[in-house]
Image (cartoon, rainbow, N blue to C red):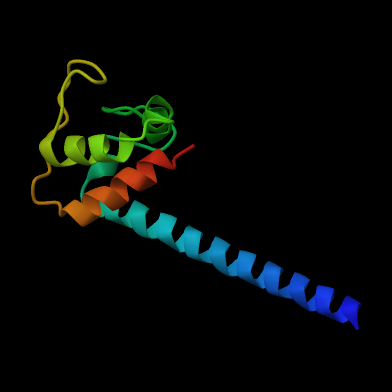
Length: 111
């Protein structure tokens, strides 16, 4: 009887992991779509430097900083200059705070 219980528990855990993985993949795709919609990928890419830094480099720079997401949200919405060189990042004031937070979280998760 116990083996059935452990077997059922294993199936439930595997199912939960599959559902979570699917949800995370969908979130990543949604946030990439948000980046495309707002022209972020015209200057940035996940793995390589374009006009601006690669998102993986941004994630590495801010790794472990408790205020990283808030700082990125501010840079996204207000623009910035001098963090990655002399070329300024333009402001995106029409981007909602919620969308800026989603983009910042997605950038920080880039590896």
